[in-house]
Amino acid sequence: MVVVLLAGVLGYAQEQDFSKVQIKVTKVSGNIYMLQGAGGNIAASVGDDGIVIVDDQYAPLADKIAAALKGIGVTDKPVRFVINTHYHGDHTGGNLPFAAQGATVIAQDNVRKRLESGGKSGVGNGPNEAKENKPAPAGALPIITFDHDVTVHLNGEDIRALHFPAGHTDGDSIIFFPKANVVHMGDDYVRYGFPFIDVLAGGSAQGMIAACQKVIPQLPPDVKVIPGHGDLSNLDEMRDYVKMLQETTATVQKAIDSGKSVEQMKQAKILAPWDKYANKFITSDIFIDTLYNSLTNAKNASFVQHN
Ligand SMILES: [Zn+2]
Image (cartoon, rainbow, N blue to C red):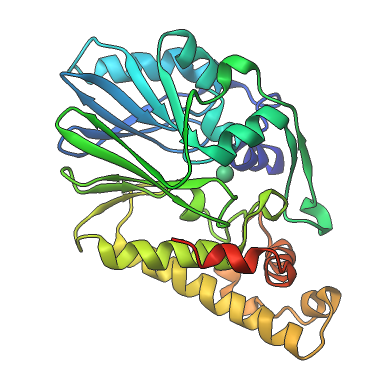
């Protein structure tokens, strides 16, 4: 189970049997669909101009994903653009096969850098300290990269990817479909409980909170929210998640201020009031590690200000 959760969240493809994975398609709004299989949720704009997908799960699922998109029955045209919300393998694993079939992959500058170089991901200490990522093959790298934002004009929609720094990673984008009134949050918002924050790849709890707080007031109250992982959501559920992030972050900050060590925080079970968010992948102890490392990693502080 731990392996499966790790696979789902961190992108370990090798341990997983993809032959049994089925792709579930949910119509979200207008011509926007959500696809769930294994790994991060996919958003798809499916229309007369062709298909744009946000994230692409794992390479072995690419044929099933393409078949599911065709099965929607709107177009026989292929995937023209893939937008990656961040570099993790459970969101970018399909880049290579989709690019090979003619799609152009778009992502924030740091996504390409991290895919190209490989390197460590993880919360920085404790049982989930780090995982080594191999460099991605050249054909899997985003062809178009951007610093702050980019807009893809297709299917009558202005699909906008906006970068938020130092959240789940240092290369996150949140993707807006203003006409259809849909947003894909990437892994700045997930529904499996305490989130994995890739502190070793420039992520921080403060940046994750800042991104959500920046986005929520700008969205219409009835916007459909596609989380990075988990079922279709809404702003009320996202506000609960942000509240949990704020309260747990404040709790760990208070413990830091009073001179407590990470081990003392774990022994005192300072996150017990939020136990329902603990999961097999991110336990309360691992989330204490995450928050402690986020808060004491001074280099993040300057990134959080940027919009
Ligand atoms: Zn991720």
